[in-house]
Length: 206
Image 1 (spheres, rainbow, N blue to C red):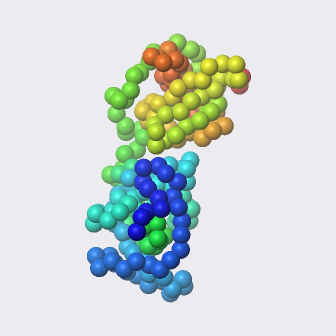
Image 2: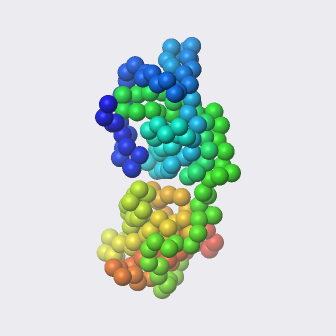
């Protein structure tokens, strides 16, 4: 019964098979599909809209439940914040439980990005640049950092997840443009301030 996906950031695997029976679960028969689904009550562990999935931690101690973005959006939700309470129906796949339908989501307990405390887990820098429009070269939410590009001949600029959270940004995608001020860190240039593209008086693109 080895899991085909993990909740530490690996891409989930999908499979088909009979639903596993569990005495502690609530099984609900869906007439249309002829499948049993399990009602899960828990909290959002993490969700990355860029990757298109995340995980729910069930209250009953069972393994994490895969939550795919298509399930969220089909049921009227754009994203899922860490800590939000959720009730969903999940299908038991060979690789583990996968959310099938979101019944309810309570964000009153969620950790919204704008409510995150100032960073304490990484070095902060004083900005020495003006506000510049840069392109996201690479970003990995699970690893907690990425790099921005100021052009082919310019050095890459490091950006930390905690810096994003301070300025209310939840994710970055390759090719996306953002407005930043940066300075010199211990290992090179680091983002000190980051804003969404179009914020304030945006400078011209490089």
